[in-house]
Amino acid sequence: MKKAIQNISPVWKPDFGDGYYKNPIIHADYSDPDVVRVGSDYFMVASSFNMSPCLPILHSKDLVNWTIVNHVSEHIPYERYDKPRHGEGVWAPSIRYHDDHFWVFFGAPDEGIFMSKTKDPFGEWSPFHLVKEIKGWIDPCPFWDDDGQAYLVHAFANSRIGVKSVLQICRMKSDGTELLDEGKFVFDGTKDHPTIEGPKMYKRNGYYYIFAPAGGVATGWQTILRSKSVFGPYEDKIVLHQGSTDINGPHQGGWVETESEESWFIHFQDKGAYGRITHLQPMWWENDWPVMGSGDGEIKEPVSKWKKPTTSAHSEVKVPQTSDDFSGEDLDLQWQWRANRNKNWYDLKNNHLRLYAHQTTAKTIYDTAQILSQKFPAQVFTATTSIKFEPKDTNSIAGLYIGGFEYGGIKLKKSDHGLSLVKYTGKHTDQQTVENEEAINEIAETEVFLRVNVNENAECQLSYSFDHKTYHQAGEAFTVTKGQWIGAQVGIFCFNTENDTAEDYADFDWFIISDE
Image (cartoon, rainbow, N blue to C red; front, side):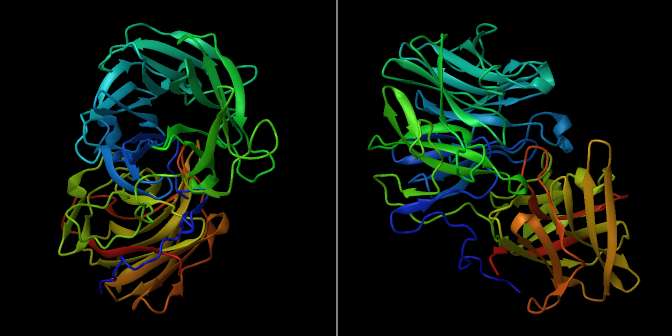
C-alpha cells in the first residue's frame, strides 16, 4: 500500500503567507549555521558531526523557506568514521563565495581544518582538502581582503588542546589550500566572553568584524568584535541575548545581505532533544555596529515574529524534506547514517527501500552504524513507516528508532510464531550503555506499520498496526534526549547481531512525518 507524500502538510511552517514569518525558521537541528547569498540565491551550511552524507547544503530564495539541496561529501575520509564517532567529525562549517567559487571550511576537532569548493553548489564538491593537520583547532572561517590577501580565523576546543575562549587569525594561501603561519591570538574572551568560538569574519566601511558566540551553547550571547586592522586590537560588544524572551542562547551564525541591502542574521537556539534549531533576526547598522533583533534595551532580544526579508525572487512555501516514498534513485537528502555510509547496507528498487541485515559489531543500538535517521522536524509530530520483514536468522532485527543519549523504539525479530514485536529503550552515559526490552506481541503477519507520536518535551508513544487504520499502543510512553552535540533523531534500521547475511532484509514502503 503506497501513500502519496506530496499532499502531506509540513509539521512546522514558518511562513505565514501574509508577508510575515515566525521563528524558528527551521525547527530542526541545523546547528552552527552559516549563510551566503549569490545573486538571488541563499545557501546555508550546518554541522553534521559523525553523520553521513555530511555537511548539508540548504537553499532558499527568501531566507525563510529552506530545502536541502546537497551534501558536500558522502563520507569523512578516515576509516575510523566507518563506525559511529559520536560528536566528532564536521564541526561548525563556514560558507563563502569568492573567485567564482563557493568555499566551505570546517574543523574536525581530532583531525584538523578542511576545505572544499565548487562552482555549482547543487552539483559535485571537491574532495575534502586538509588545510591544516592539527588537533583542537575548530570553527574556521576564511576571509579574503580587498588586496587579495587571505586569512583564516578560528577557535579552539578545550577538550582537545587545553585552550578555549581565544580566537586566532592565520595568514592563508589565496587558494585556501594551506596556512602560511602559526597564527596570532586576536581576542581573549576569558573574562567577559567565556567560551567565545564560532567566529565569522567580514569587512564593512573600513572595519574588520568578527561575529562570535560566547557564554556557552545553551546560555550564551552574540558578541561582535571590530577593528581597523585584521590582527586587531578588537573592540567588543554584545548585540543579542535572551533577555526576557524564551529563546535561550540566541547566538552563533552568519550575517547576510539581501539584494536590496537589508541585513539579516541567522543563528541557533539550543532546544535540548530537538537540537539547535534555526532562527532569523532582522539586523541593521548604527555607528558602524550591527544591531539585531528587537527591544528597547541597548542589547536587543530575538524576535518571534517579523516581516519577511525583501527579496527580488518569488519564493514558494518550502520546508526541509521529511517524508519519503522511496521512489527516487537514491535516498532523499534528509536521511543520514551514524557513520560513513556503506552502499551495501541498502537498495532502492520497485519504489521501496530495502535494508539488508549486515552484521553489526556494536553491542548496543546506540553504537550501531546501520541506523538510517533524520532530524526531529517539529516539537510535536508523528512518524509512521510500513515494514515487511521475513527473517530466516533469529539474530536479524529491524524496526523503528527514536532518540539520542536516551532512546527507544520497536524492533521485530524472528520467532516460532512468525515475528516478535519488542519495545526497547536505552540510555547511554560515559560509563556504559544499558538497554531494556519489553515483549509486546507475537504476530503471524510479516507486514506491519510502526509509529511514534512525539509530544512536547520529546515524550514518545509507540504503536503498531496491521491495516494502517487501527493502532495498538506498544508499552508506556518514554522520553528521549539529545545526543552528543546533536538533537534526537527518528529513523529505521535492519541489521544482524551475529552474522553478516544479505539473505535477510527489511522492505520499507514509505516513511511519513505528519501531524496526525
